[in-house]
Length: 216
Length: 251
Image (cartoon, rainbow over all chains, first blue to last red; front, side, top):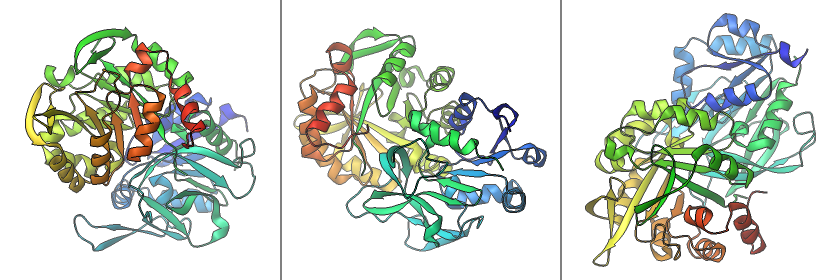
């Protein structure tokens, strides 16, 4: 499939800044749409689930928009490649736990369960949270996603929670901030990046391009 | 490992980029769009744009301009100036800002910040604080440095710790634009009080001053403006100097 024939759908669930993701995909020469309508899923060659903020708010919005089952159907049954960015990646997990406002009780929210695992607070010792800034992403292996990148590169992070994968084989890259956490996950057609490729200058755009070049 | 962030601050007066001294005697320095492009070429890690007239003109920073700037820039971009409503933040984020910096409204309305964090997530919300020494005490100033709140800086920082925000941009009014060196003692104390990352700002003198600041305070982000505008210094050369002196920077 030619790039110009691909339709990239950025899933709209009313959370965070999506303009930079839209601009980045456009810059790479693809047609892009921001929507949560079923016929747009139908036309899509690739899905992107962006987002920043809390797990609970993210899932609440996905459920409210009525797209939870649609996402699962298109990703699991129709095998459409999906990329989750930051919170978007975290929502792929089985569940997320966050400290409820002002107290130590944990609230646990069910995720999309596309990749088994849980989202937990970063284990930082002396490091401050959020983890903000450029940090090294260490790829475990070379594949189509990082084919033209060095095995270690800096990308831009801004988050306080991370994805703890149940299966190590689904961890494609890790990053160190006080402790080592998962920065890229991959399972079949499902990809997730904890950092922001759309905010990581040319190397970020390279990663995004490599994802969009995957053919379903 | 996390890299040190070298951040140029862009001060906008509604027409062009300006730089002053102690938040006064503003001079025109360059056109905004061109300067942004230059910084992108010079390897900055992030940019902060503050509209210095918004608060006192009772309007939020021009979002159309933000849209124009961010359309082709794929790097972190913080925007501030006159932000006091949830919708102000919403509009700026929709137009390409990644983080919104809030100063005066954060001081007077903690509930606004709490709501902003709930709505957009802590990582979007930067509290900007301007302070000045008055009779030996570090006090918080608002309204682009025009209003003395009489509030002790460190008390304010402890209150900010309860708000679960993303980071703090801390600027010394006394050092601003002087190029006499960062206010290391205050930044060190502030960084040890705050749970969130601190962007140190005000008074950058040269690359050695930056190195000294980082080594003495352990901050992970350093902002500067005057040395980039008025001296032959660039973010790229700053990073090379810091790297040669053992600081991890993005390459």
